[in-house]
Image (cartoon, rainbow, N blue to C red; front, side, top):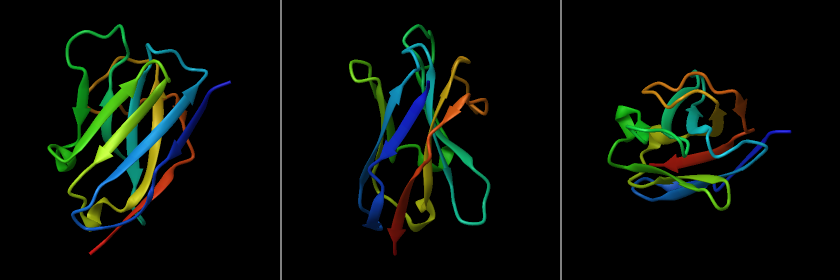
Length: 125
């Protein structure tokens, strides 16, 4: 049984930082892991992805709006994935979801097989 459990959301002022965590079980280290977000009234969108351990080539992808501010990383020993979010902006406010995919990493990663329930990050101005 696959479980993805996000944590680390909260309320932060603009310019601040948050570190989101996703604890994964039931998925192997070969899965592509990703972070997505859904802002109020908007569709869920891709944020960042990290390749599985057998992937070659590009290891991470980011959506343009977070490049240089967010960093995705994996801890294979813990089967966890993190999203370090710096220089946060009010428009980063959203529920952030962790996803896992059997498919290789790609620029869009719009084919996640499993999802967590999300964690809310709120950035105040």
